Amino acid sequence: MFEHAIYFTPTFIAELKKEIPLAVEHAKKDFDWDSIKPTKQYETRSQRKIKRRKLQEDHVFDWKDDPGERACRIWEWWRLRLRDSPKFPCFALALRLVVLSQVSSCSVERVFSQLKLIRDTCGDNMLEDMTEIRMFLRTNGDLDIWTIVDE
Image (cartoon, rainbow, N blue to C red; front, side, top):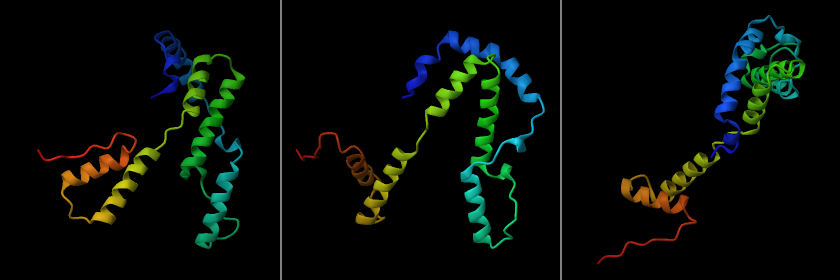
């Protein structure tokens, strides 16, 4: 499941909680978010939007409306805090672990792809039980194939 759970021991969590007041204090300080250089991905997305929408070449989008750019700047804010201050050792470790553990929806997307394949092949009027059995067989293909035998 969560590979890094071994790091989040009761002692680590207690130390992390001690750092929270200082982290809140740092978060309340003024910060010039525009001082952070935009990412290349954001600049590329902005240029594509300008071309698609046929806007002026010098049109400027607000980075705060772009979730990817906003997340990058928040990460950069934390990176600066952690680099300049050794007061956040637990936050530093927790943030690295969270950033390294990327959550994926691939398994769910694979299941939906299998459902679409079944419905395209068998039609939409299949009974729910039969759809469930076919889904189980398609998504758990590594299990032994079981058959229904009339007694």
